[in-house]
Image (cartoon, rainbow, N blue to C red; front, side, top):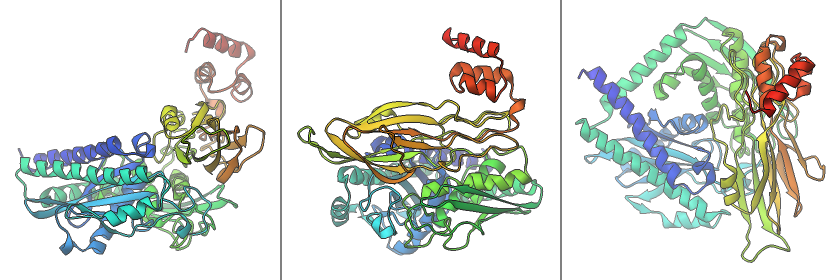
Length: 563
């Protein structure tokens, strides 16, 4: 076997190692956000803290931000102090993955007594104390317990003082501490598999395979960039923000050996917790560019390096301490749409229309009421959901799909199992996909409440209420977000809001924008959408031009169960 072939086999094996690492976390985590939604990441790094491979399971915001985090751990802990059995931890928003609810664990990997690299993983925990998960804080100090880069375990001995501090400062101590042990265990699984791989291939270090991975990834990415047309383009998009709209402005430059993404002109820091540290904005800007330019090249330090991201300090995509950042994902998830607005001018026919962007999350904080059953207690139930993705140049947008995060929607059963909540309704939202030659993806409709004897607060983490997803190349806009109580009271798309005992909340999540002129949509595609219930008869006739007879025929086909 030639060195090149052997190194390629080892590279693939490394990806398998970190995927098993991630699956160990999924199987052992306590929080539904990890077990059901896959809100996590895992990766392996060389001795310099450069990411060599990432797990397929996970989110770009986690893994691309974590790519920068390991170097901070090396600097803070000190390479000379590291020993077998050590595990390090942080939830620092600026040296981790962007907010306090993400706990990152790093484990030094030893083989035959020598440091050969690092295993790292991140997971979103259901609660970290403070005001709770939401946008309501005025500074990061209000948002929960801060863990600086420190030892979780020293030579195999877990810091019990740290565990007691965590337990004393969070609302769901069993879940949070359980997730911390799950993170440490997942790295241990990765370390065992990494050591077994080194033994199998007769290696003492990762140096040779690391050099092969980084050099080939760098060269392949640069070749893709060099083949692009040179140019610069600017775009801007506006989203709801908290109390005032915010603008994301992007100038994109395609150079010979790099792509520069500059956010100069973007809105300043918001008073509430939707601000985004640069590490997280950079993660999603790089992801957007990599999807468009070099999607087949594995994600690692070298394949990310040619994508450069800059933003003035104290803009909403480069918020500095102590800005509140709990919902940094809301802004971060819009970064790809903003980047694509500029890239579409330079590479037309490549990128999709705007989509829902940020996850459609909400958290229910339940409390026992007068008729509560014995033993009832306060609970925190977090639900991850998705709006529609933007239509693509040649395909419709994906329904209820989280782009760019890739986080999965939580099953109703898992959400109801986490606390005394009831999901009365969850279904696709007709007519929510933007019209066009290619239709935008549909959002969802949900109706939620608490079990008898409980009142609750809902912390809404939504956007696209006043600024729906825009179509591209002549396509129409997607439907906006709507939120109200069952008594008709309108609710804000962000912030903690009370719901009386017996009340329910109705949520309508946004659809993706359409692509291309609506007049060019294939009538057969419109008929199919009508049969499936994706569009109503009124929309099929008014926007897409179906005749009364065509509408009636499609409805008859739907009743017969035909496609």
